[in-house]
Image: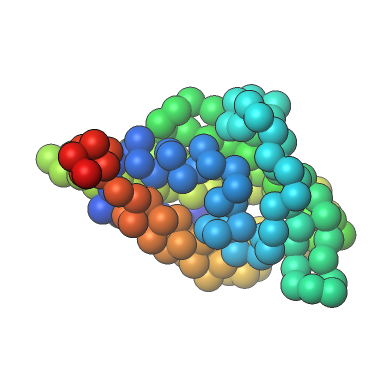
Length: 155
């Protein structure tokens, strides 16, 4: 199980707003290249994203399904990218003590099926850490760049 963390300068609801917008998925998930369809009830349990992985012309169409959704603190997904396999990815959003404007994002990734499931876990973790750190950095950029709702109302 790979575990990565990042502190972002945004409140948990602001980070959740990025996660809850399925159309932003390829903007923060490394490897996802485009969205084809987002379920109207995303990110409710059972909702699916239909995305593509890779780069043109070698694109693979697959899906991501919500397993657990507890806004604005927990999202667990079943991520598919065959023939690469399947994994569960969990994103936990924790307010930083004494800093209401910050969130600690903790990301876990568990290979479930396919090649990543058969490779020794220390090697899988070693391969996943750089990718997941970049994923968290992209998520941070999106969450930190969101306008403050109070600022929008004042405009």
